[in-house]
Image (cartoon, rainbow, N blue to C red; front, side, top):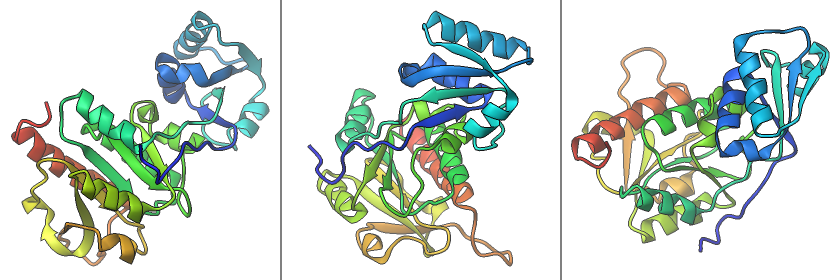
Length: 260
């Protein structure tokens, strides 16, 4: 059993937006929903479908004024629906390995060192789910966790991909290497990502947009890959860079038969 992390939960949270709400109600996430708030006066097929889905699962549905939904969603784009949920649960590292084993695939993990923008994390989760990543590892401190904004931007991916929240990423990196997983970091100087051999058990490590991967964590990398750029701006948004690298890994793994 991995000791470098432990189940953590955030304060009571909310899922906002019609797509994210529908995805939550259709998955195991429905068990965490305490109440569905629908904006009074709004009528649409999608809202009606959400109400029917909630009622079928015996989840209370309440009509509420727009200003209440604005408050619950912290003035986000709730589209007339907010789910009150119990906190998101974090996974254990062993859960990620078990998920890979259940799919009979080599571990394919993503480690995010200091991603602070919930929009970036949500977007990254969407891509990670799309390419078959078995789980994401994030730090407990100085990084965004699983929030309502992350859930909305992920458009439901948060319900499908487990996230480990670790106290010490360096310790987790060492454990991954002991368990046969290769670590690939990102940096301005490194192997061209188009030549990256992403076969086998791997973890892609993405650093903070401003500072990159922390020095102690970078020492644990087996190889560093880079995305060549010829323009004036020499850095990419974290979610964009992660998307490029994940799809490169996906292409390599699909070509080798590791992924369908």
